[in-house]
Image (cartoon, rainbow, N blue to C red; front, top):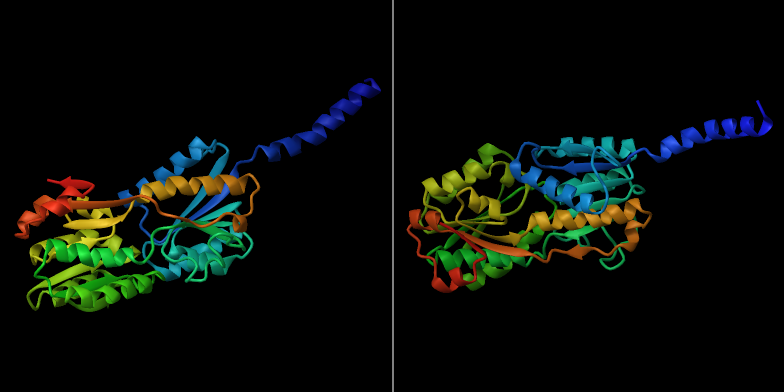
Length: 325
């Protein structure tokens, strides 16, 4: 064998492992506190995949995603956060604050992109919205003032409501901010409030059963794993007991809930793909500003309203994004 051919052969053999490594897919860790089988959670994941595909990342091709679903269990979320950090992926994705908090504790070096966090600055996840610093950035779901609009919407739809129960998942760090916003507006609407933490099915049932002991009750539902997991129960009980309720997302109304006002979640997940892409291409998360939700939806279920004996004001219907008959 000639010397030149031998060198070329050895050089090619040495380069092969490097080329193979270069073709390995990039790795993303995904942590949700929701249930994997929930169609709404899968729709969120699909929106994220669509966003990534548009940017050249294909799951099963040049991208591998490790999914973990805590199903409303805070201890499981902490375990999964440590597990995902131990894998050392290129990027971690946190769906909500209750997923972001354990990831923040698990690593301060792996980049983290969050998707639905109400107040990332106030919660201590970032140091600055315009220039987060550290390893965390993402997309804020909404300012807490949106919770005041839930109360306003409830009173517009059901003016006789005088007592309002607010149910929330205590494992959601953002819940306190939503509660404060609702409490601030309560006096102006002439209602008395009671806030009830719900961690499981029994506590959800108990909160609604207590509300219906007296007349003129209404319900507000704060976003969280527990309230999403048990949404069919909440919708069923409010219908049975003739309780008007306002929800944070449209899928509650699509399932028979009365009304909702909140962000377009799928839009946020598609937008989050852009930050995953930029980090995979070398940008630092601390240099990417936290972005706010820009698409909000008001949805009303007229069939449910009629079943509750409620007449929706024409002016309200005129500015509703979708009316479900």
